[in-house]
Length: 255
Image (cartoon, rainbow, N blue to C red; front, side):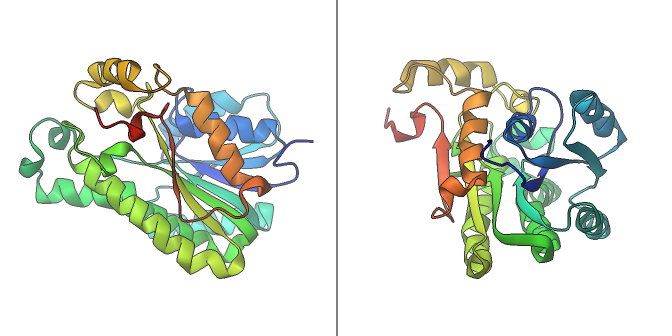
């Protein structure tokens, strides 16, 4: 029997086969979960549809997490189809390209708003919209990055957004804890995803990580999915409000 046998959940942020969100959704399904894949638009829906083609236990729901009306409609759809949710995965982030190209001090007011709203507030909005249909002891996770804690040139406003996301994780853990609902963040090392390739010097980052991590290699997508599975399952019932690093140990190194 799988670790998520009989559980129902939703995963937001599947862009393609390389997405961390897809790795999590795929592994969760292998462990018995029934999953709704939340996609932002029709283009992403087409991509996700190909990923789940011929597989049972998956369905699609189209929703822009920046739109409260769509979030409300999504929650109603999930309630109608699942009754209650045992878990939710938030893997959504975005910043304007120009705000990742120069110095952080040059971040535009609009760019700051876009990055913080999409990369941090959507996690709060998602939790609020789904709160009533979360089962007792449900698990909610989001994806962050070390740039929230350390300066990584080129990550810029996304680092600030991820810091806000991690703080939101702790506050949501407090708000939802009285129902046994756990809220945690997973912090992967650099992984070759569409989002990561938008960071200036990403290839060089991978090279540095390979040299300096205790494990002498970057973490893999499957390893992030494994840790996420642990957090979504009953094995982590005593864990909430935490940021868990899956980065081959890079975050513990000083130099």
